Length: 99
Image (cartoon, rainbow, N blue to C red):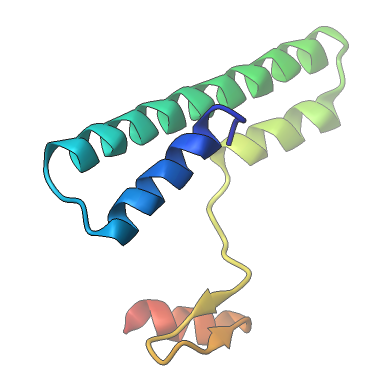
């Protein structure tokens, strides 16, 4: 998350905490989503530039690692269950997702 996005998130959080609803909250949510998308696209562009550099230098291991970073499956390391308890074991995480 960039330095420009974080203040938007904080403002939106304060608006929600104060109980504001309607157009003002919707506008702030849209701004946060747009900034998040922009940050994600920038991060992906940087990774693609690194891919090109690794390809040009014939650094196949680094190239493979970057491709895996982009296309790899998300694997959470910790998650909270319905009771608010943090679960870190793989089997426990699967059980929480099933619930």
